[in-house]
Image 1: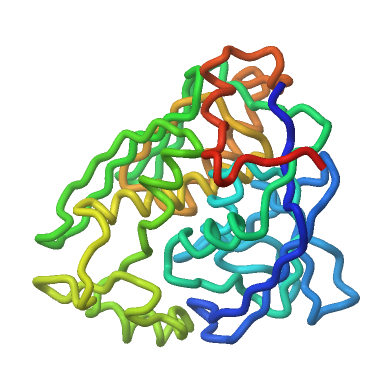
Image 2: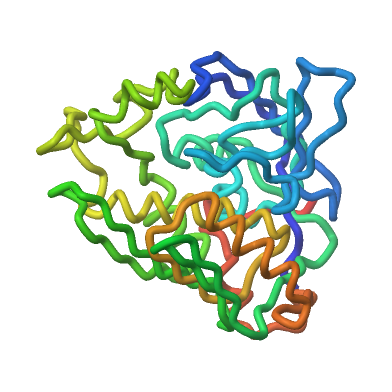
Length: 306
């Protein structure tokens, strides 16, 4: 049996918001089975909690935002990606500002935090969203599809007019171990020439070489260089997992993206949910062994029963 997971105990972290530049404190709290991932703004005590869901996504410019108006949480994708990557289904995220802290621009800090905190199994089976027929969305020259597969596979292609990126493609077969080693450490990235324009639009106020890979016209500006030769497309996969996790279940399906972004990922999720014949929700106990084995955690992270 593959069981739902939560945290062993409460944990708090403080950092900067990438776009707001504001210092923010995030507390992750254990939650019961079928609670899902929910966010609550502790600085807005009269506002309701926001469920992390494809249908609560608002803005998708340069990040994924859930909620609307003042009661919204920006840049949720990296944290959500790590929850999915570690098979964690139920967490209450208490936050005293409008944006999840960016940490080092990847998911690595959250993986470390959750490893130290501990992961607990709940006595309720995981549910999987199993793709039955293909769904496709397009936006100009960008597109994304999801189609049947026994496990989550992401085939991602990015194209950027920079000599260090050009066209990068990676096919990633999901497992918790593969997520930790291949995807979680890949950082967000941007072009030095775009910094002033983005800041004028109220974005990346907290951006720095500590939390992003920055490229000038010829090279990586960060003195430590890249963590992977293809770190750029690996980060796109990190984002994709975070955005697709908003479907609310573990996923058995293959996702193929070309020049995708947060908007296209959300379009794909919404179109899938609007196509009931394209998927079914099933208990993990009814699935193939290889589908379930992908969620085995490395021994250092393996959850104990509550």
